[in-house]
Length: 242
Image 1 (spheres, helix red, strand yellow):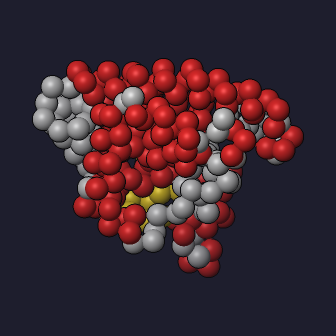
Image 2: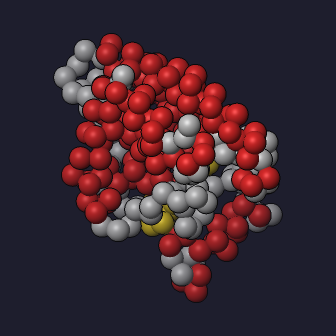
Image 3: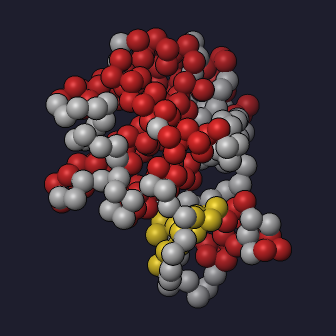
């Protein structure tokens, strides 16, 4: 059964965390936003579930995943579901919960990275909140990046199993998501992230190991992976980089 992924076209966004898991897991999936509207794709196909009155468990927002008749929303929830069938999470309950906990922490970091350029309201343009963004970005650079990076470096240090991963000796969806987040922060804040990563070599090694994995590398090189851009979660405004 092919998975159906629903997310906004034109950006990586939170959908990319799910795409990386599907790619690494070798799953057959359809990225509905990339299908033409006249073939049942695009935003209208997504709105059918977001706005349809007959959807018993409507998602709040994309991404969401359709598996047969089941509809699963929220990025971390989707990855929790995919961890088993795609072998991207441990089999035991304690291990699955630990990976999920790490994923939720990555999600917190993503929100804070986004709020550097939209600290007041998501509905306002960046130009309408530039002064607040500079203050928020300074705090993110000086305090929040080190706090999150220190935490993940500690987790990596305490995983005694061979390999560069957060949990055990196999890659998990939390590794994929953390690598994607590091890549996004490097795009958004190249100077600040370079400074931070010099102090966190294991985190940089994890990032490099994820994007060197054969399936992930093929996905990146295929041209199907969208580039980071300034309509996305991670945005590069030089004045926010210190």
